[in-house]
Image 1 (cartoon, rainbow, N blue to C red):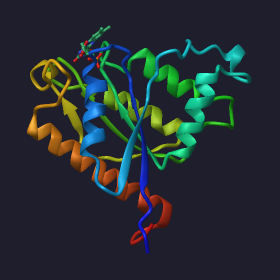
Image 2: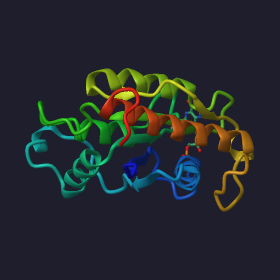
Image 3: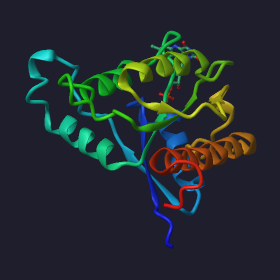
Image 4: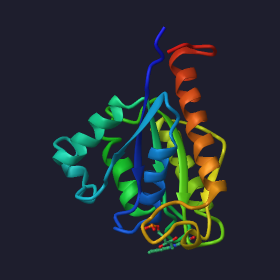
Length: 192
Ligand SMILES: Cc1cc2nc3c(=O)[nH]c(=O)nc-3n(C[C@H](O)[C@H](O)[C@H](O)COP(=O)(O)O)c2cc1C
């Protein structure tokens, strides 16, 4: 039987043109196993969440919710801002979690990675993100933890990820995410 191609929706939590996290997501698109694809959703243009608008969200939020629902799994690539998740990423998670009872994230397998110029490579932001998954009812992959520290030394000026160890971890993360989403769809030994 033909194996189902796993569609992973990648979202990087930075709007910055030369963002290391957007670059890490592009690297993931290259490193994904053959039986999967990593798509990318850019967060620019999503306004700050206002609960007054949750019943009639902006078109970009409607698109985000549609893309999340269509994906087999989610890959969040988070920067670390002041030891936590950047506003643009939390804002997107919040928008697509509303209105109450209509959260697009519900039941989705999710993997996390992140790059920072600091020495802990977004560790603190990633653990905050994992806390948020509890109420979103997402199913996080535990390992590997992909924390790209000292990012300025790991990417070239064009945003190519040069670090072989980080590349290996991303490859493993995506392999595990494909297996995890297959497991959740089918149970152990599932063939789709
Ligand atoms: C508001 C702000 C807060 C930051 N806080 C942290 C931090 O807590 N830990 C850290 O390692 N780097 C921190 N940084 C540095 C980021 O790692 C760096 O700006 C990184 O390039 C952001 O990700 P990006 O390249 O994907 O935009 C912070 C940067 C900004 C702008």
